[in-house]
Image (cartoon, rainbow, N blue to C red):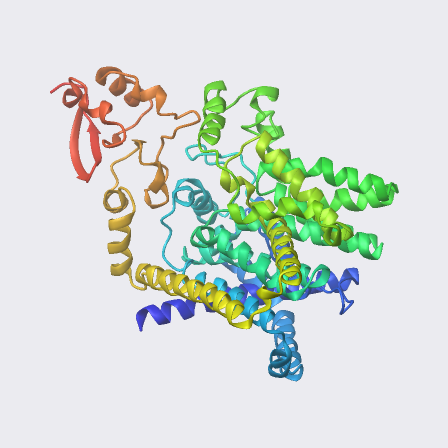
Length: 585
């Protein structure tokens, strides 16, 4: 019952956010007088996504002004909540009057199976966001930065954490959640972006292809990104904004109404304000805009919508460091906190983890050779954008997770190719029309999805921690050094430098210095002998050293280490040492 209450409370909080975003996004669409055509409407997923973007911008402005507090965030939610609640009531009434049950009865069997597959895929994700934070990057820098903004109310630059100069639009949502002491809600906000993306994939599939393809594409998107629903990263948010931009661009070309360019540019601005890699979309977008509309007023409209969500991050970096893209622009603008070795090491690490795109996306390669699909303008635009993103990914940083923004369009194209090929095969080989074979195949696929949904549900249900005691036990078991950090939060030992425990910094007493890159890089410390290490740490006013002796055994195993450092306590391989006053026994 404790777990059930916890789940309901978390989803209740998310529902308030969704209603507020729906209300804000719908007000924007109503003000622009777009997305009103019932035949082409992108509806609630588009409105909620835009409302999420509006919320990000307001949170950014509040943090710039030093007013990122629970009072202002509550007021922000209240503004959108009333219109959002009204929309939800109206939508519910429309669904009841729309004869859903009758429509389901008349739906062809293949579409029913595809809808069931989508429902099961979504079911796989319901429990995934509910355990407390335990993933590497969210503990390393996503949540620690948000933690600092929530604590101070300002957009502080936290130079002891990794990537202090990155653009962090989506992470502002996490800071708002942490204001209320809820670090599970960031998982749900990231998952919300994934669910909204699935909704938009479905809407676009219905609009430009058919319901069967729409369901399969949305299910494919969810299944390919299942692991992302467990984390407070930014990949799902970035993918959502890229898809919103693509959908709005398509609506502009479909209707010739340039007001669609405003949400298109706004969504691109949100994406490039969340991740540097999305800057590569700007040349393609500018080329498409220049081809169809060169009016200065249009370009001013687009520039304004683009800059509002992201200009702060790049202007701040340019003014304070001289590099608007710090640290990745270091080779062009000069390095500040990073150096050339850090830069090279980062990209070498990405290339070492290179992998090919997920195999279910490969059928998208067939689409250009299918005349029925190639003849659709919407499909051609999806091909151009997805091919461009894949080529940029291959040429820059072919790290699998960095391709996530292209997944929604690739899933649509892949599903379209598979559905077309199956239909062609069925027409050429009548044996494929045998009902028993088709039903057996569909039944087997749905049974596998049901088993996956059940297994995932049980696995993540076990990790839900509804009470402080359950949370402590889970995190002590699963998070490196958690017990040690808990002890240090309760009993501070002064200024700490850590080596090898960066994957749990969210739970450490902030600030704690030490990282692979930047001014506190491990390589400047681990190459020193015990006396030099003690001297360097003492000169930098550190009082204690935390070392993961399993990852960096050479630090504590070197001769004479115990002459300069006193062991205080340990948590498995993670050990705390106090600096001796004079480095003597």
